[in-house]
Amino acid sequence: MTEQNADPRRWWALGFLALAQFVVIMDTSIIGVALPRMQADLGFTTDNLSWIFNAYVIAFGGLLLLGGRLADLLGARRLFGAGWALTLAGSVVAALAGTAGIELLGRVLQGAGAALIAPAALTLLMTLFGARPRELTKALALYGAAAPAGGTAGVFLGGVLTQWLSWPWIFWLYVPISLVALVATPLLMPSAPARRGAIDVVGALAVTAGLGLVVFAVVRAPQLGWGSAATLGALAGGVALLALFVALQRARRVPLVRLGIFRTPGLGGANLAQFLLGAAWIPMWYFLNLYLQQVLGYGAFASGAALLPMTVLIVVLMVAVAPRLIARFGARPLIVGGLWALAAGLVWLSFARPTGTFVLDVLPASLVAALGQALAFIPSLGTAISSAPPEEGGLASGIVNTAYQIGSALGLATMTAVGVSFGAGNLGDPVALTGGFSAAFLGAAGIAAAGGFLTLATLRRAARPAEVAQAA
Image 1: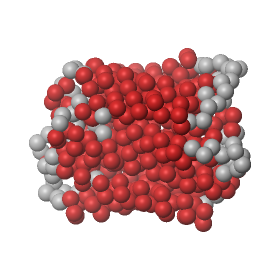
Image 2: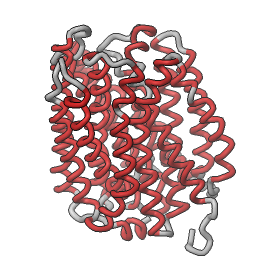
Image 3: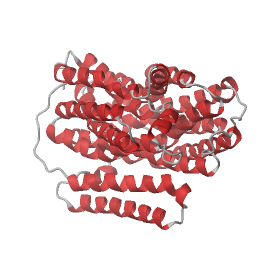
């Protein structure tokens, strides 16, 4: 799309794409404040409670590569609509669930829908703004801000619905949103012709099952033991399936993921940053929400409201500040500084007390963590999606979304194991709970700090917005 024939509906379309990103990421967090009530109603144990989150994220992250490939082959607009239809079906199943198994099925369907929506949305964004460098920077800022804002706002909205209605309403909410999306997609989104090509369904199943087994092993390890046959068997099976996926990609003439794309300058380092950013950020809001409810005694609504300052700060920084900082300093310093600021906020949170208060133990530390997330997210996202050639835009979008979501799943699974090992499963004991949550915060801080050092080593040259736009 050139400067002369830019779509006049592009800003309306951008608003809708940002809303889609907001909703997709909100779906990972809106269940946070409802977890205690869902645990009681559906029969989840403390060790298995995180599967309400992980079932969504594994389906989301594991199928994103397939979603990116389908966006390139079938057209991003068509896939965008199909994703909303699948989200609608999953939301109805999750809302009507009366058992843990049915609930997880609904979450898997929601995650599969998100795996179609997310890469298609990024591809549509690049179609609309890729030829307009100045507008692309603004578009990426608005789209990028929608992700962490949706993640944090979901906690508040989940609190409102859970407190004043009941937890199934956090899923009924997606029904009207999905219906509106299905109507708006053909009206606002640019069309793209379908292209011929093969679809590696076996590869998609292998990577999804492999990631699921690895997360399953990590989540159950505290209960069964890290050296138990069940844990080691699940880990070995997951690694074997992931190795099979890589072997299939090497052998196929038209792979799901062209492995050579990772040799593109900037792409590998930016995706690594997104992976570690998700692995540190998601455990933070998960355990912070549990600390607010299970230690400080906040209700669902109050717990969600307590995290609103983070949302406001993230949106302001991403929309008004981050683009200017990228233009002046480039991507690399912001990613590194953001990851280290996130690590500092997590270390601060680890000092939370069993008899703590929101003002002293939560607010300042959470704002520092939000500052780090806001600084690192946009430049790493923009670098990753702009590194690939235009014909692989859907694949690049799928890869970067996969990196963040799988980082989130593995990070939460690992920190859940750490937290439970240090007392996070002892409901009714504020001292033990706080000790477990503090251990999880410190573990996530280590992930974020390591991410900063690894970004220094792997992302050797800072990309600037003009270069990002030209690459797109």
